[in-house]
Length: 319
Length: 321
View 1 (cartoon, one colour):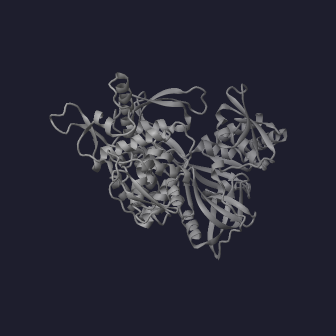
View 2 (cartoon, one colour):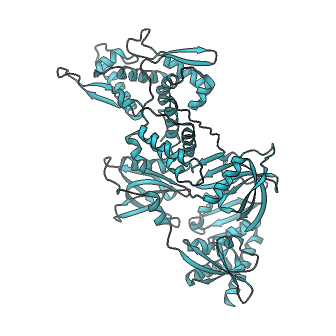
């Protein structure tokens, strides 16, 4: 589904939008509210200016007035309210509000349920179709509530963080920046004082979380990460590990950023891929956890380590 | 959409919203600018007819309630009008915290499946005078996985209640099997998208991971072809199907190792060899077997025997690789 109707939705909404703001609106603010550039908004307004009721004489047409950067509607030609929500719009809205409602630890739960009632009433029948989509999020009540408390009070946090790639528990003091909910998992983005960098902490890997008395003070160089590139951002200068994946382990290529993907016939339906990692322990664990469904092609030393660990384990079982 | 066409459609809305009478196509042709004027030729009439048919379809697609009928019994053909009460979004007033909740909720769809619909809803609420803060002042950024090519077809078929046919492959299979399903709905459950519906060939409810559907699912047959069960809880259906019964597992781990496993385990104290005995519960024994095998000689399974066998099998394969 694309949105060929975006412009029509906007054109029909613009006059009521201005009508609801009799004092006028700055062009820049209106453009931002409609999610378009100022040039596009100007084109939309110019188009509307020649539209109106049949006859198209004075008094029939939409009339706008521009004062500096501010625009106002002086004649609506009868278009005073926006169009009802389309089915998909009502679904998007109701489903999202219901998902938020499921999240404990959100202080705004009360506001969410009030908004849900009002929006459902205004949307009418299409809201009933919201059953076609459900979003259910894994909520970690306790940690989420504490992190939110720290963010609101601008306090630093002390925590233990479990690093699965090294199977290690680390202790850190962090300056919280924001909470993220990405693909069903909650993350705290914070400045980590120990590594002196911005890091993402998955909430279900945090233990023993305490809000400190000292204020949260992320330094100037602490910048939020652009999530459009994905959560994992491997550095290009990290060494490569080449793996040969069985058919049953092909998900690895979807799950981790991989390079040089080559389909292979041995094993049938297999893939040869390269992964970049600065942590040989992570690669060893990944291969071992795949239980034989992946083989290390390079470096060979890594293959030897995996084999040796498995043999040592088998020896212990037969003792 | 060209500016000319957009202008014609907007004018059509103005014209039909401004009248209680039904307006005939011929009359619309003369009062709404932009239509091919009548010049007595069939060619011009045909061109107008095509244009008008397309415009009607576009307006209905937008959700404009276009009515057809006759104002009086003497009218010889149907006309068109838009009932204002059906067209207009009802009055809605949100307090500041309610508007903030709406803004936050809609960000869930940012660059995800229903993002364009969320944007449309946002535009209409703002046009109704509600000041929804889209950027948000809360340091909270929800987001759904955007890349799921089968979503649109599954969602649309569930919304319209049409039969859906697709090829579904388990991860260890190369070629999938054709499934015919009455789609009840799509669910994002803990970050993964699923389709829930009634599988016609198996005559039972089934749950499908969207990422395992190959190609584009095809909807067929009339809309409203079935009714999903009353009181359907999609998330609960997925949870039941995905989550299996819990098993109790006992492991032994060398001191100082298996930090991740210990986070979810109860420490039962050391065994005779000085290793720590750990008890934990799992609904996914195969995933746990993978995790245990990755610990090599540091972690051994004491019970249950099925899990012990599964780990031994993995270790044997790894040792031979």
